[in-house]
Length: 161
Ligand SMILES: [Fe+2]
Ligand SMILES: [Fe+2]
Image 1 (cartoon, rainbow, N blue to C red):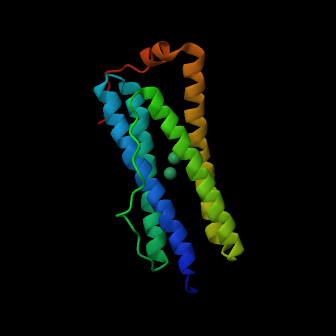
Image 2: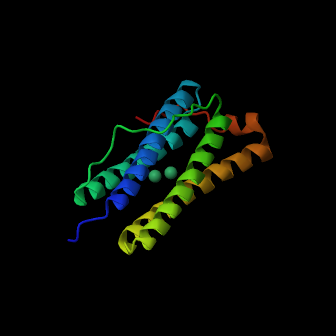
């Protein structure tokens, strides 16, 4: 295998930072929601956190495959929502930011003629796009039915773990 451009490894490490940051944020939000009695919504954040952790896992393997050093020390700033609605808003914003970053990385990979890595970023961007859509839909629902009604639907006793 040809040696990989260090810039490509850097782009994957930047993506790893994004995935680790959302993993931590969603996990914290999941447990805060549970603590507020909103276990149904908490379970969604919990599952999402696990999904993002798997994304981080894939990136770590990919960076190692490229003989790079996965940087698991670095995290973006963790913004803590003070309400369920704010958590949805923050989730929407971080997913949109991830989509923009991964699309920009895909473009840079194409420019560096690494189309295989570009395809990986494009796939990741599509993934995060579905998350952004979900958050957007929830925010829309809050607007339509009102916060109290929305939150009433999120109460549940089932603990995710
Ligand atoms: Fe992800
Ligand atoms: Fe995501």
